[in-house]
Every structure is written in structure tokens, then in C-alpha cells.
Amino acid sequence: METDDVASIHQPVMPRECLELLDAATGGLFVDATLGLGGHTKLILEANELNRVIGIDQDAEAIDLAKARLEMFVSRFVAEQTNFSGIASAVEKAGLGRPHGILADLGVSSLQLDSEDRGFSFRFNAPLDMRMDQSSDSETAAELIARLGQDELANIIYQFGDERASRKIARWIIEKRKAGTPITTTSELADLVKRAVRVGPKEKTHPATRTFQALRIAVNDELGVLDRFIADAVDVLEPGGVLVIITFHSIEDRIVKQAFARLSGRCQCPPRIPQCMCGAAKRVEILTKKPLQPTAEELDSNSRSRSAKLRAFRKIR
Image (cartoon, rainbow, N blue to C red):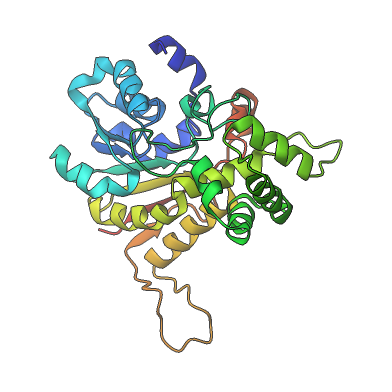
């Protein structure tokens, strides 16, 4: 993919809000914990000629494309290939000090969604992979659904995808497996889900969307690493530094909201428990009482921002 093509397909979500909350115009060190194709990083580097950015991504292809796109900032940009849960080691390895701001956009990048062979999208017939880091030996989506039992599979599709027909989908997948025709491609899975899910005539979303989302989250343990990332981000930030997180579905947003509440000192334990067990301690100040959402103008120009929610906090000095 050419650098010009990268710029044309990738629009960073809520750019103005991110730059303002990060206070990027004043200059400092920042971490883009989900580098992707470098859209947010480019804006941060352009906001002040003194800004430096550590970009983190587990996708080697994304890092290569981002480096090419940001080559004019080579002296102020460094990339580390790791999951965003490795932010502490990435910052330490860069050796540039504590960051003034950290940004994490949890959406799947345009590179992955538009790839014809990564298995993230049902728009293309491809192996059912879905791994963010294809160089790893971790389990693919095809291997996951070939291993899990019916109840486990149904729970993943329901919990991570909010799919009401999760049990039916899981049962049909298991039946195909027992018949000796396991699902190995995106088209096979999309066709099965389309037949299993009843969709109303006004429904605009493809019926397989929620199932694909759920499997992607499970394959990459996206929710499991989110709490760890937030905790480490607080430790890494300089006093007064800001963390901005953009989520794209309710489960992610709930995890972020609860983690932020604990870090602001609000106990998350059930009311009848006599002693706090959640570890709540006032370490941050919440900057967004309610999550920010894209403006109507942004929704018109970037449809992929439609479910985005932004939350931010400042580390107490």
C-alpha cells in the first residue's frame, strides 16, 4: 500500500478532541498506544515542532506503513512492536522519559478492516485468522472455533458481541464441525450467521458483524489486556499527564469507565461489602464526566466513528 493510499483510507477519530485533551499544542512527549496507520500520531507531531511520539502497535505491517507516512518526522518519532499492554516496557526501551500524554484508539484499523486476507472482514473471502499480530503463534479464529465447546463459543459471541442468537450460531458451528466440515473462511462463517440470525427489513448492519467482533476480541484478548494497560498507563505518565481512550462498543467503554472510577477513588464494590476490595484510590482526575462522542459533521465525513466514545483523565500531581 502506498503512503498516499494510507492517508486516503485512514481518518483519525475525534482528532480535535484528542489534541485538546492531550494539550498537544504546548509540546511534550506522547505515546500513541495504538499506532495503526499513524493518523493521530501525525496530528500530534504537527501540533508542535517540539512534540515527540512513541508509537506502539503489534501489527508489523502497520508499523512499516506508519513509518513511511511519518518519515518527515523521523527525528521525533519512534515505533515499538508490541501490544499496548506492553506500554511500560516500550516507554522504558525508548528512553525518552515519562510521557505528557497517552492516547489509545481501540478501534480496528482501516488497514486490517480493508485487508482481503487478514480475516477481519466478511466483505472478502479469506482464511478466518483475525490475529492483530500475524507473526505470532497465537490461535486464529478458525482454530478457536474448532477447539471450543458449544457453551463456551456461545458465551463469547453473546458477551463480546451482544448477539442474541449466540446459542443458535454456536450450535450450528458445532454441527458443521461434527459433520466433518469445520468453518475455516470468513465467507463460510458469514453465510452461516446470516442464515441463523433473523434480521429485520430496516436493519442496516450485516448480521455477522457482532459475531466477527466477538471472535476478534477473543482471539486478541482485547478486553483482558485493557485493565492492565490502564493501570500501567497511570504509572508511566508524568504527574499532570493525560490518558485519552476511545472505545467502540459498550463492553470496552464499561471497562474503561469502571477503571477510571477506581483510579479516581470511587469504590466499585457492591454496597453491602463492609470493606473496599476493588483497590479504589484517588490517583487521577476525570476530565470527561460523560464520554465525548463524534460531532454530526464528523459522522458525515467518517462513518467508522459512529460508535466511538472518548474518556480521559489527568494524573494527579
